[in-house]
Image 1: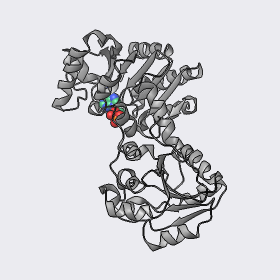
Image 2 (image 1 turned 135 degrees about the vertical axis):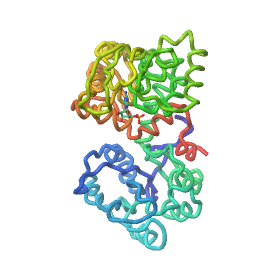
Image 3 (image 1 turned 180 degrees about the vertical axis):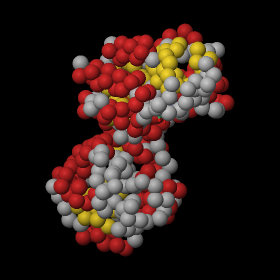
Image 4 (image 1 turned 45 degrees about the vertical axis):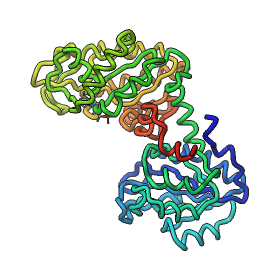
Length: 402
Ligand code: AMP
């Protein structure tokens, strides 16, 4: 990561850092945070700047207010939480641009924090707006991006704002970690065997990843709705199982089979499947070979033989990445496959493997099994993780390098 500057390349003494964080944390009806991972992971960046007696202006989005300010999407509720976590004064400003925040930054003492209101209260945030970026840029000397969860978005604070900080922009420590961990897979730096498990329903969001990793992955496991287009193209019967409609997918799959025919044994598909006669938890079920699903039935979870096969591969892997459930895990009756994968990865990690898990569903299933703390690293951005694995330089990172 030579060319990307990080906060470690700067001294923040007497400087104001404009830090883009992703504090878009899940909350309950009482506005209590139900998962503070994203905030906790940003704390090292904040502490580094504060310890050098810099000022911090924190900017973040929260939810999807679509340019309309409201109490529901206000970031104010984070002031108390951050003050307690960091044990320093955290101030708040209800505006992101204009005279008021400028005055508040001026009054801020070195070693203190000013949290600005939700960036998405301004419709310009999601529209790559130069003026909005210019106004925001007045609030800091050094721009820091520590918001991995939105680093794949073309939003003003991610792609345009850094343009106003020539030479004085960098990524934070959360972002650095995410990139370093992903490089274990993207550059094949991880200890072998390297296993990548992709599941979920939207094959279009993951298919390009296969081509990128096939040269150095030892095992690519495909589960969930993602597996049916593979089975169908191989001539199997998938019944009414979910198949994402997209002509490009069929083309890409054919290309993969043609181009990598000598490596195709790296890709492991489920061999058996739990099928249901309707898309609900209380449906009739059967276990059948994955290529023999009758019409009127749909595959909703991987079967026991596939669970065993996938878990055995995980058991011998030293570097593991997982994104996407292998079944409709939201229905208890079809959650066994995904929960078994979660447990297998956690157990393997306890025995010394490195594991990286991303995507809200995979993390939720780890929580179902109370094993989220056993994973080496929970990515703070499912979408950004997938975009990186497609070997795309994330726009938020390009904006720092340029
Ligand atoms: P994605 O956003 O592509 O990661 O998809 C996640 C969703 O895929 C979850 O809500 C799962 O319920 C769903 N999913 C996984 N396997 C299947 C399946 N066999 N049939 C239908 N949906 C599935």
